[in-house]
Length: 322
Image 1 (tube, rainbow, N blue to C red):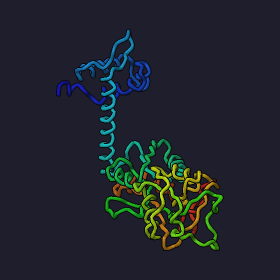
Image 2: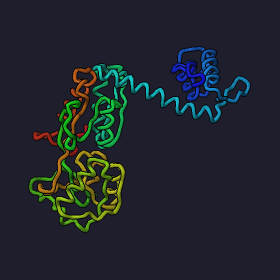
Image 3: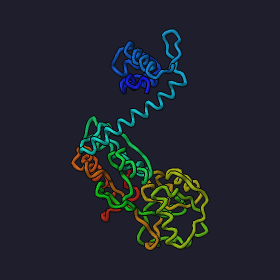
């Protein structure tokens, strides 16, 4: 390829810094080099590409459409190389520079912020990146080395010798309604569990089956022998909870969602034969077992979770506060 030997990662990094800052002096300050070095690198890259990237307005460089295209692809190249380096280091059992923790959206209400704070205290200076996604997406990212660990539902995971799983807690799936129609606290032993078959004509808001909670809710409907009357579908658990709060319909959701709208939602247990409990755990590649970052994450997760579960290892509604 023409000029390929003159296109270096360093030149791309300098070019991308300028595209972010849109100013030679600021880009130079960010990189710890001189403005002259930034200008030379950009000019050299432009020559290597063989196409104009900037319009010159006096001493000002104005990016052309070609520069925007190169910036987009150049960032992909830099990110791809970083992922490759991290994956290589992981295969060798070496911690990457950035500690990437994957999490389900529903765990970010209370649990994940507390865990990350504890990890930062244990590992000062640790650069942590939080990656959010569905169970399936995070599982794939972990296998590909794109994240270092994942807080996900483990009851659907297939066995793998390449992956280590640390069980943390169980979380029951409840029938969730607006608070005035039930109780916002965990039901007392005297309260009869709900039979979902009695709600075959009740409007429900449901979560996409891309998500573990969505699949679990449909499994409960099937066990109860009913097809839910779907009022609306949502692609995230936060919107779904808001729809319940707004009286659009009932939902089947895990107890950890109680922290989203304290006191606004009622959580009613479902009959044992129809109920599903999610197992939430911490997953990481088995090759990283001795990694200091993984060890700190496991210790933090266990410590935080211990204050949020009952004697049976089940998440207690409202335990995340304080």
